[in-house]
Every structure is written in C-alpha cells, then in structure tokens.
Amino acid sequence: MRRWRQDARSTHSRSSWAGVERHLAICRSLPAIAADVIGTIKGNHERSSPNRLSRLARPVIDAHLAAARVGALAHLVETPPARRADGIDAVWAAAVGGCIDLLCVEEGFVFPARPIADGKALRPASDSDHPEVLDDAVDEIIELVALANGRTVIVEDGELQGSIAAVLRRGGAPPAVEPARVTRDAGFVRSP
Image (tube, rainbow, N blue to C red; front, top):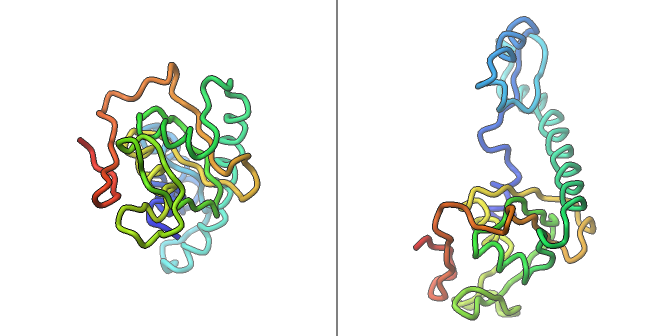
C-alpha cells in the first residue's frame, strides 16, 4: 500500500482512549481534548501491554473508519453535480487547483499516468517505471488534497462510479494556500 493512501486511512491526530469510566468522563468533559477522540476502551489498562491495547483499539478504529466511509458516501450522493468531480480527469484538475474538500477513492484504484498540459491533465501510462510517469496518480491526488487541507476517505472497491470522486469547496474556490503544481522532471508534487 502506498504511503499517502496509508496516511489518508490513518486517524491523523485523532485517538482512542483507554481507561476506567470516571477518568474517561473527566476527559470527555474537556471539549478541546474530546473533539479528537474516535472512541474509548473501558477498563483499567494501567498494566496492559501496547500489543494488547492495539488489539483492543482495532475494533474502535475500524468502527470509526466505517462510519467515516458511510458519512463520506452520503455526503457525496447529497452534493449537487456542480460541486462534484467524478472520474480521474475531473478529480485531478480539481486537486491541482486546490478545490477539493472531500476526496473519496476506492481501495484498489491505481492509475499510472503522465502529467500533461503543464501538469493540469493526465494521460494514462503503461510504462510506470519511466521517470516522467507517476506510478500512481491517485497517491499524488491524495497528497494534493492533504496539502490543500482537504479530507480523504478510502472506500470499498465498487462503491464509486469511476473509482474516484470528490466534493468541491463551496464556489469551487481553492483554499488560501497557493495550489501545488506537479513537475514533470521528478513526478512529485511540489508547492510553488
């Protein structure tokens, strides 16, 4: 699995908490801290090993990711067509422009491509080892979305028509940050 897809799947600064109920209740009463909590593991885990805590946290994280998938797909369906980008070409153009608020991409979708037209469009490529080819344009899109403070949700294969779709920012306007550009020389995203 590629680096950006793994990062997009992660919970970033979000966390799950383990502890006895009275301690969890105190933490939940602090909005600045509680906002980043995706779930809790009740019980006294003072002597639990990191491996055990990891096993106990897995269902909490999985439930959070499943809810995020359902919410993202519902948001995508409810979004008017004028604020959506569907398919690799439309999503690439929106990502390069910094206009994506929410990106949904299927787990197994990989798209080797060459950036063309000064990096604003893609041409499919079969020679993914060539230096001018992005071995997976989807990873580049995920990175562009992250750089523009957008959100990415990985969904199950077959849940999207065209394997990739995005909700654009209101008005389609890019964020205050300068949009990233893709350079052909190395095929990596670089901010101007």
